[in-house]
Each structure stands twice: as C-alpha cells, then as structure tokens.
Length: 154
View 1: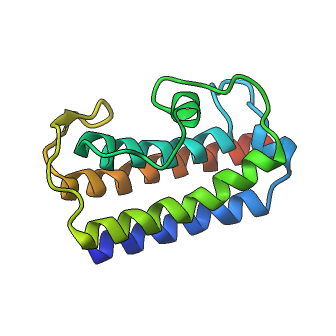
View 2: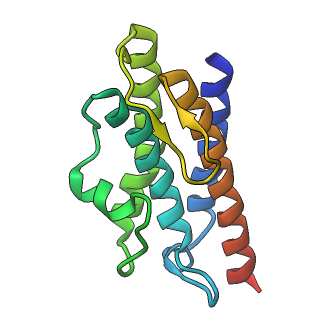
C-alpha cells in the first residue's frame, strides 16, 4: 500500500498548491453550470477518505460531525467559507492522511462494512480496496477542480 499512500500524498500536495495559488474568492466561487466550488471539492475528498476508511471500518473519524455533514456525498456549498476554514481544510489534507497511514501500519483496520460506491459500482470489502478507491475518487475531484479553475479564470 506504500504506492497508494504515495499517490494520495502527491494528489493532496496538488490540492494544497491550488489552495495556495488561488484567492479565497476564487476558492468559494461557483461558476455558472456548476453545483459546487474548488474548496468544497477539496474538503469533500478529505471527508470521503475518512468515511470510506474509518467509518466503514467501524472506527471513529478525527473529523467533526459538522464537517462530515457539510462536505459528504450529496451536499453542496451553503455559502462562502472563511480563510480560517480554508486553512483548516488545507491542514487536514495531510494530517488525516498521515494518521491513516500510521493506523494502517499498526493494523487498526480489522473489519470492514461492505459498501458499493455509486461512481463506479464497485463494492469495497476491505481497507485495501477502500484506499485504492480513494485514489480514484480524489482523481475524479481533481478533474472537477481543474474544470472549475478553467471556468473561473476565463
């Protein structure tokens, strides 16, 4: 799983650079034809990783219920977020991944509640499959972020 964690770390590094290279206004902007914004997509990947890895393993997430409910599947931005919240999301990109890697190495993920993902129809049956899917999910949202950036900059 070292390669999977390496890919996730690199992808999250890209998301972090996007945060650094764009204004708060641009991160919050929802262009015509879109349902969400850049920062929602970035927070969503953090929340989804925690739900797919921890909650489906019967473990507690380090994220608040408020954050999970704000950025989980089938949500959309309810208004602009502050720079402080953006900073928190940026920090969570790496702290949550670091903890997941540590917990994985310690063998914390012992059980898994099967889950069929809507995007691909695949059924996740263990933590390895969940983390492999997380890489695909984060790639999908990187594509959304690139489309949002293009729409905002034009």
